[in-house]
Image 1 (cartoon, rainbow, N blue to C red):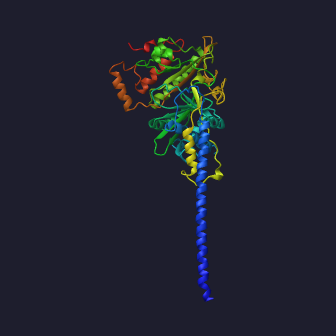
Image 2: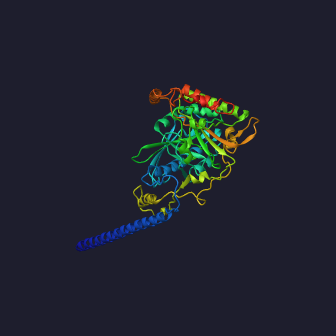
Image 3: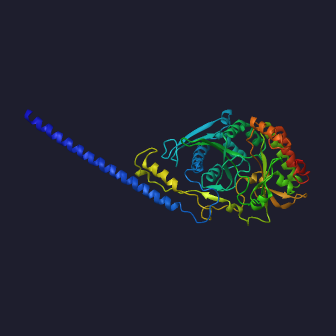
Length: 480
């Protein structure tokens, strides 16, 4: 027995060497297969992206956005964050609001692979949902939005508009696929201000269901890795999806510097015109006694709230649809494009490795570089030709989604107005006080745009009454 031990150990050593060699060979084969699989997956995704990114030769409306443009990534992060945050809040049982709900913040972290708490996303980003219970109650109880309809509209294809903001905020606008909702980026200070006034806003909407003030459906924030934080709100689209808007005015009651050059307006019929354009063109809101009384009272209530909130710089946005012209100019289709690159599905069973640096994650990121916006056509999205949604619940949006002009006998005329008070998140702070002082040196300080909230609200309401039929007109608001 003793003499056999050396031979046994020698056999065991040889066996260990053979196992090690075999293991090394298996490792090499696995690495080779892994590399080939990764290369094949990347080739397939690249081929698919090349095919899907081809667009028609026709011109695209708006700015073409590539991966190096923050708006490209931002759109997908908004879509994913809204879908998860809103659906999770909706899934919970309704309960009465508390004071804590107005200051609540819910955080979500997304990456390209996903985890137990959040699904996979096309990019790595963080998402924050503000006061979800408050906005849920506003949407359902006072704005009459169906939760499923709201999510379906927002988390499908986005539409980009060529038209910019009527103001000077520099915000980006995105429209939901059915053109009912606007996603608008806002400044950090505006986000803080909205959170601060949210309870007063909620109470005003509750007591004034037909308010003309912008309807806020949600407040959110997106943050990209090593990027800045971008806050945005979801709002109602004042203009309807089924009607062309032939003239647009942004009216503040201020007349200093409030004119869009008429020679430019002649070349750009979709330009947003201002107070002096309205006055010089001899325009007025053609409303009979009933509608005039209703509109005047609601504007009074809304301006009282805005005065109490200490804000200024808001305006009445007026869209005019001429029923005789109808939709023959096809304004909507000429100013919109769809932005919805397709991404091929990846078989998750063949995923090699985990985490954001896995071949699947790398390939997903690569395909996003190849996708382009597609021109708007019949095969991508169809704009409705009749009023849809919740507008019929509100007095000022019951006539084809707007307020139809009437004569003194309250009989219908051939014009529809689309009215709303916009840009309500600008408080009269130190900078605005400085602007008031500076502009007041060279112009009538009562007719410039930046004036204290009490004066602003009074002037705004007086101007709106003056430009309705039977009013004195807007001429007296002009500077000497």
